[in-house]
Length: 387
Image (cartoon, rainbow, N blue to C red; front, side, top):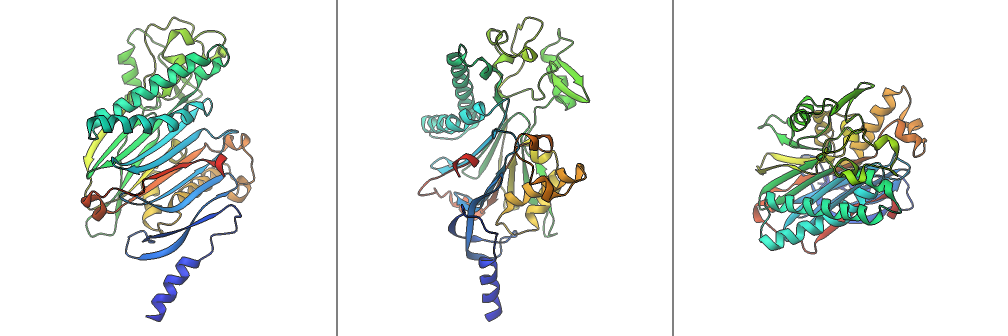
């Protein structure tokens, strides 16, 4: 009995490192990956150089871990978790060309989702599609307003990965090349399998290139291979995104935007779209956790490797642990030490890895089956700038 008590105290008080900006919260929940220990431990939100993290927190259907590391001069990733009357909403927004589109999506998409859900008194695929459509229209209007003073905002876009847990159903919507992977227990084997749930829209995938060729049969240059990378019109890798209006509306594909974005031939129809690929499926008791992450994580870790890391370690710090594993792989590819990589500042850091966002949701099926509503509602955004 005494030894068990000492073990609990040891796990709760184990030092995480010294960070003056850490905020400490008390969370009652499972502290270990297989969910057997219900401890009340101190967990942390803070910043470690270019890494922001929330080691453990509660949402409507369980616990979460969240982290983001910056590589660009200005962080282009945004993300959020919202839990309320219409379940839990997760968003990972991987910006490109600048931070404006990802920030706009983070500010507006969930609001549109709330209005659509309240109008329907339900959550469906149409709810998510409507929220995406209004966000895309809003950002396009925003570009129009700024066109005369900030024309290059027409070349800014964002991938958009959405997860919604509502009444024992999981919805996943994706635009671009972020990814969500399910960790699913395999019977009583002790093994947790990785199952990718999202469909990606990246020209490096043969099915995406085929889709583009079918949509643009009269354009032999719709996808171009340059330096070993397939790009839409030789410019951009993703075939779907919110924003990037220069690839959707001819009036924005002209001077004064940068010449590298201007197409030599007239644009008769949108080249990129913001149409999400959406799936919905019931959640089962052997569904253990979900990993939502921008493509910067998956560039360095396989689906199964990421699931194994989460499954084989304590829940506390899961998202941060995944990011550090990816950075260690990035360092290894350049034949350098992880400690040296950490010393590289923003912008130069982008030559070694991308901005990386990770959200891990641990699934509590007792809460899911009861359909409990979190009170007070949870609303959290990962953002290095606010620390």
